Length: 393
Ligand code: 0PR
Image (cartoon, rainbow, N blue to C red; front, side, top):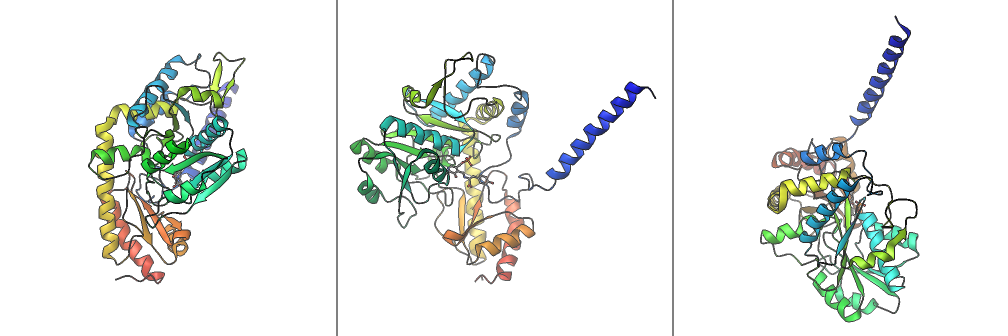
């Protein structure tokens, strides 16, 4: 055999071996397509998101002059989010990797605008705020929740002081999917002239559609005058590919507070945390937004809510109870030993979240969770509950 042919064969073998190895590891992962991931706020990306993502693998929005077309896609996506959140004309968005990054940028902005270092958060805020405290020398002031599991506004008012940089409200809490009374927080922040950040990482792609469907849910967006910024993630209910989150801010001038000069690349300034970042997830999020539109997302949310209701009924039929009436497609099932139940379910190939603090497990009815999936899950769940000594009927 010719030397060059031998070399080519060797290269091909190596290539195939690497791909095979990757597939071997991949086969150990849980998949959304199986439907068996019941404890994740992410889902299978929409087919058009996958297609769009692959087309933009080599782009870099950190250098928009090299990729002006990609920059236009980003602007179009931001304009979709702007309408979704009822943002005023002067508002703009910073795209990043997800909810954690957007929350970091929001508090970074509030801290620089105010020159203050205390942030009031509801007790059930996402753990990204703990990272923020550690990263930015911020003191968190956690506020207890009401019996409905949302921030106590009176107690919040009492904690506002000379060093308050921001108040945070959650629109779609991580554990229970609850919405804080953002309009009450907004009134408070108008009176006290405090920055109000809304973490709608999960709920941002749900609440606008719940309202269209006639659900009576709290307002959360820029229609409320004190809302200064909103975190909203396309890689959760936006059906886009990971990683994609956006921080939307009421006034684009504020971005100067979290911008630096970029002397040797073609743009003058850059806002936010990331520098090099791909347009692939942005193109994916834009493609889904265009393809589904408001109507498509409303249908998706309607479907998730119907299946969430069906799941609730099936759970109650086996004699278990929910911790609270669900606001959105997040169910918390009261369980005496969440750790044990979660572990055994994992052994049977089902993934839920254990919430020991609340004495519950979490089921998130994402778009990949169908009625058929629930019908397969319930008998297994019942069996596990009997095994672990839960009181069921
Ligand atoms: N804010 C809220 C309200 C969240 O629920 C989350 C994540 C974040 C911020 C942070 O977002 P990133 O994770 O995008 O930075 N909540 C999800 C959760 O804890 C994250 C997640 C998603 C965890 C999928 C596991 C999983 O499989 O459920």
